[in-house]
Amino acid sequence: ERLEELSGHNCLAFSYFGKNLWHFKREGETVAIPVSGNISANDSMVLMASAQAGAGITMQPRYSAMPVIKAGGLVELLPAFTPQQMGIYGIYTSRQHMPAVLRSMLDFLVEWFAQQPNWQEEMD
Image (tube, rainbow, N blue to C red; front, side, top):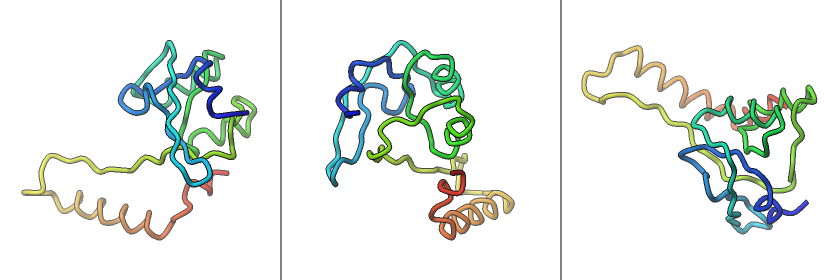
């Protein structure tokens, strides 16, 4: 029921993002909640499968968790609070000698996400 209660639970966290602190917006203010758990991974699906198996609580991207929640495999906790948002990044070796197909794909993704500001909500 309260964000602070997360500290008392086994929280399954991403290895490189939010492993020890989960950030939320509460009444316009950013709140950092210390968390710990016995599983960390750099793969969302590993954490989600662990949560489905009853290992603990995990923070997941809405677009991937919503189908599992709707199917009854997970329960959404604390829906009144907004977790810290993550960005989407295109990672490539170099801007020099970039293949045209890569440039086209990056341009397409930038345009698509700009035109679909609520793309995550479409999964609801």
